[in-house]
Figure 1 (tube, rainbow, N blue to C red):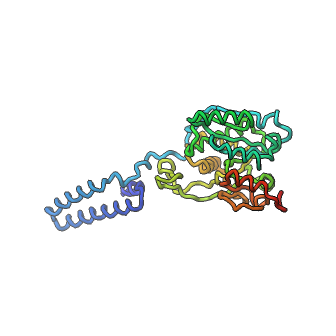
Figure 2 (cartoon, one colour):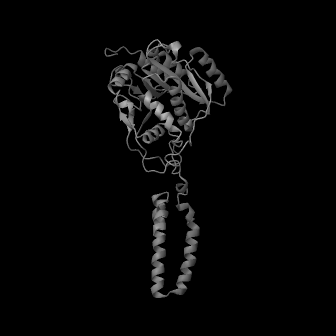
Figure 3 (cartoon, rainbow, N blue to C red):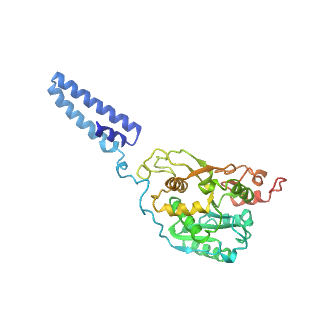
Length: 348
């Protein structure tokens, strides 16, 4: 019976579980019937039928064969980050730019082709950094591209703005976790004297005044947590055709630990350093925001929901310049400039 139940736990869908149980019950019932009624000839026929049925359904397909080889939830140095810098602006937080203490370093995920997005951010809410000389600092982070034209354009852009961090992994959606670890490593090594770290994307509007206010409000909580728009209990997506597909082998548990949307979250630089340090012992998961949740669990830390963080697009309006909004997602360059130019009486 123990073997049977272990087998059932490995079945990959409810439909397959039901089918397997029905077949198993039929076999058991027939064997009991045969034992008491001595239907030897019929038994031979049933054995042939049973063999044919099992051949048709291919019993191997009923099992989730990956579960017995699932990746561990934790490990020892199984995910050591060994990628090298292609572009590194080590002085973004350095002495040359240190006119005052750094309140927050904002790490912005981008792609090579998103030049217009980066320019729109520099012309709008990133102006609060005063070109990386004030209490807010920022850096764009990305991997590599096989397109030499795009790489050359990126290097030219960086020679003008000196605000791009690049490491030598392929830039792709499934490699966002590598971007995250790159960001944590760079911030720990080159901006470790900042008070806080924020991670966001290049299609996000950040209300920097509201952000600074919420850092003061949640300062103590962020010494032991990551804050933003957070979920406490989400199930992995097991649909193979989904952008967010996670196999049982990647993550065998029923629920993810708490995590915050990767569109925008904040934490103290203290926690950021700890997240990087523990990441080498947390197996790679391609969902970067969930991966941070896994690292937090390994550290026995948690997430903090903070009002004003939005993982979706908030309708354009003066709310963007109020303390009720910190982030809004999915804004193109035109949206970013429109919001920035709004004349609002409640503008911070």
